[in-house]
Length: 629
Image (cartoon, rainbow, N blue to C red):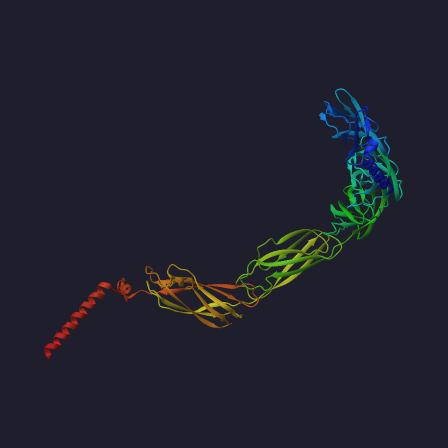
């Protein structure tokens, strides 16, 4: 605040009294008034600084005037090309003010204060030097704060860490913008910088600017806050030294556990297990993330490792990282917990941890059920589900399960299970067919599960439930070739012990006998062959009638017809069906009887002769009777 007040006082004096300090005469008859108007504060070391001068001709009118800058400490001339540093004025009237702007570089060795900048004013006959006061009151003051990681995602670090991102926050506490800023970083305890120079660019006043580099921490450093000196270069040749404040306040420590399989899908290991996945879970109990973490193993009873090391990379603070190796269990191992030595390498540190590893033995249970739960005669592809569960602590190796059934097994009857892990049920599905003529009752189905070192046997009693069974007990009809709209009534009887519900009967298609369809209602063809009987109880008889047509070209005789029955039954998940095959007789017409070769065993010719004789006898008798009268 005191410095800013001083700067303000300088500016008031500078702008309020330009005439008293800036009037310079080149002769007794010619004089000028000059003062400078910098666009911003000027600081030592700045380059390409534009300074605008206002020149007032207080003497005689001048012609062919040339104005150019003159180098005067601390103002160094900017490199102009092709005389572009000269301003030519044809006529400069008395009292006329002219504004000119030139670029300067300020010497980095300049101190705060007001300096005289000089200009050449040349005419064809005279030369003048005009001075104008220019304040150099700008300054650059830079502070540096180090944050591991970034301000939005800071890291806590510990001794021995390498190649850690370090964000350097620079704040320009001066009163001018610093340009061409760069940092020179020299390794100093406890930091070793990976870069020696970093380009920053501009540092606005009071605004933090972040740059990121990488650094390592000496292994012998202790926790605490360190001030590391760095050099800040800015402008053209200006520099300053400042301290970079950095915290080292972290530590690391580990907890290691081993899980066969993975934590999300654990398995168990038992004696003789080969090439099993073994996952090591490493938890960082410290407050600093550990990098370059590697585990080293050495085979020792009862575990034999297939690899000697496992790289985990980074283990964040308070979090876990895990990796999986392949290991085998000695064939003579017994169940129990064993402590395996594991060497942990991180940063430049090596530590040995005793990690517990569990070796287990299996225990197998076997349960069976069917889908659907109730099985009826005529069910096909019945799913017999065997649920295998290892509730022990070890694997069951090389396991397989076999089914032995009194019914046909339409699926594979022996299924290989491989390894049965602990705690996870395994479903094995077998498919069987139950014939339609199967009598209700219980049927034993045997299961045999074999694995290395053990056998499990189980017998499951499959209950086949009774179902309705229909038979044709009577038929009523009169069918002749070509007859139409003739009813056929069929009497059906439920010979079973269960009630059939919502019974539907369908007349099967035939080329001889087919359902009658009215020409005025062709849509009746959709239902002409279907009849609904409702519920039919055990022993109950019901009649079903179909109206049919008989093919005109058919010969008299017996013809088969088929009935398809469908119904629901308590306990059945889906409708039951039954097909019944029977036959009907087609009788000859009267015409067919007359044109047949024999009528009641008498040849046709003889039959006609007999009829003629009978007609003649009747006529004779009638004539005689008339004569007598």
